Amino acid sequence: AEINGERRAPRFGKVLLVGAGPGDPELLTIKAARALQEADVILHDRLVPEAVLEHARRDADRISVGKMPGGPSVPQEETNELMARLAADGKTVVRLKAGDPFVFGRGGEEAIHLVENKIPFEIVPGVNAADGCSAYAGIPLTHRGLATGVRFVTGHQQKGEPAHLDWQGLADENTTLVLYMG
Image (cartoon, rainbow, N blue to C red):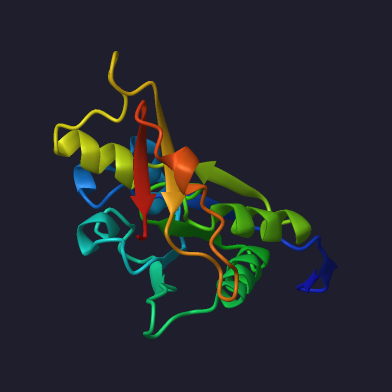
């Protein structure tokens, strides 16, 4: 790029893929709160509560990129492109997702897009919904003598994709089953 007649390398920002936790703003990690303070732009899901967004810098732009079954939604490809374009313009972008970005949150797809476009990024894990909700309800996901493991599965598949759930395997009496988006 040429700035004031001087040739300079383009300035790149970065993207932070941040988990907002299961909804309680007090379960937001310190690192996630710092990321929200650093962000120029926050691209957030519809499930992120306003009380979590209040941790953001006051002058940060907030853009809802949520998805709603049967309702208004921003296609994933548009969200991917928006993240990359904003970072390429030198912005610090927080992609704020409910729960943890890598637990049924499309964080993996977004990370792949950023790698393919050579956009610097960082992952900030969040408390996932299964951990937060079960703990608040007083239900341990594992318990010595009762549940030696836990399995997370989703009840939703990509459009046109058949369900590939091994119901026999999921019925293991020694494993806690957590079903997302049932």
